[in-house]
Length: 151
Image 1: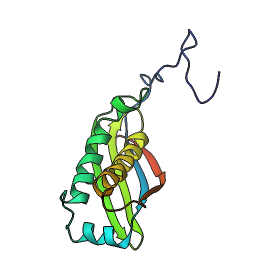
Image 2: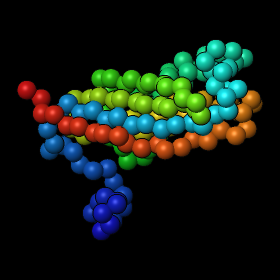
Image 3: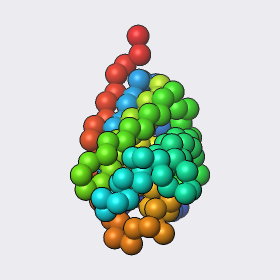
């Protein structure tokens, strides 16, 4: 059996059984970046894009995506999220995106954090594609994940 795939008795992929795991406070932080032209950054910063507030729309899309991760990634567990926070930092070459996700559950939320960052970047891309043909989404990665027993 491959360590990358959980197989059931019949040799088919299945969700990992977490029924014996104890709920803990879990947090995951992910980040990514979208590279943009200075002109596009100015449009975003000055809220001058004709489609509206790019970062506000991207934040809502990221939060919604984190909540829907179980519907997007086939073997992810349904997890009740207690926090999804998305932060944007405008830099000279683009927008740095950071997502923090928390739960009190039996499994972690790293996929939700990574999904939030990915969808935020894709939303910025979608909203800006008419004005910036050079955009690149880069460096999406998990920064940390923690698990703390509940008292």
